Length: 120
Image (cartoon, rainbow, N blue to C red; front, side, top):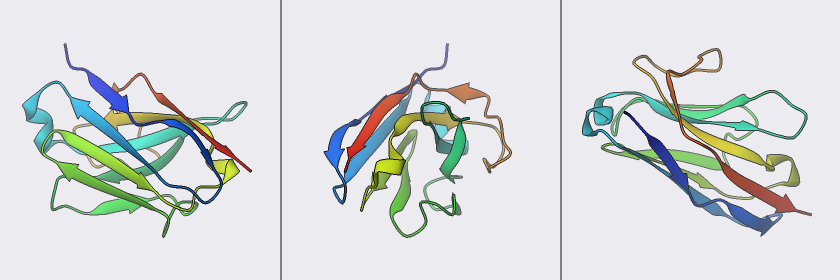
């Protein structure tokens, strides 16, 4: 059974940085698009960023462009989050799919989520 396992969440102050990591249990995921979504309390889950493979295109939500950077290393995906804001507070989910992940995608595979809390 395929698993996506996130790590790296935590409590930080506004302006700080965090790096999220996600490891896929199957090496075949190095060929699949992977990305990040987030869900804030009382809100719907939203797309954050995705990357098709290590050297492939990256996609970002407008709200995180210039602050967040997604990267890949085979079956790993990372999200470097800089200049964090209180509105970035959410549970962040790693996701993977057979096709490019964009805002409208409902990925096939999901991680369990990791909490990111940004205090003002």
